[in-house]
Image (cartoon, rainbow, N blue to C red; front, side):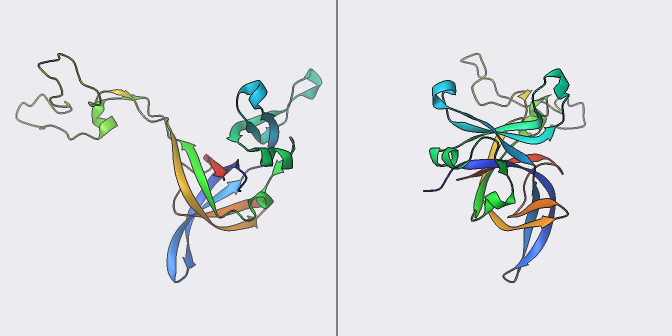
Length: 201
């Protein structure tokens, strides 16, 4: 039985490797400095999870402030992980020993509220000859019932959704200039230094 856990990485760049006679695209991600802050329990919180603190931030302790982190993330964990990792344990490259594939989660970029043309990639109407329907979404109404039906294109909130990529293959692990680097097969979303969640199960 595999232990379920996770960590936070930052996307660095993409490159290519020569593997088995083929050029394979890979993405380099850095394992950020992180540790287990605490555990959430079923008795107290209703579910079991590990709270991971990423990039510890220095605070003014003389004012009684607690430790702060640049980012905190939660990962569902099982009993085997809780028993083998105490709160305060550091997660680093050694944690990835024997891991072959991961599940990647990220939040897509929020594009505010958009008109249906952009939100659903609808085709533009005629541009000339007095047309008044350049960005009109054409017919979507009915005579009866006199309302719009579900799943028809409308303006609304665009993206800012959690997206999951499963069975992402890890090709290699290495250290470079005090950075802990993972090479994963294929492309990963997001900008340089964007944070992603790796879930291992």
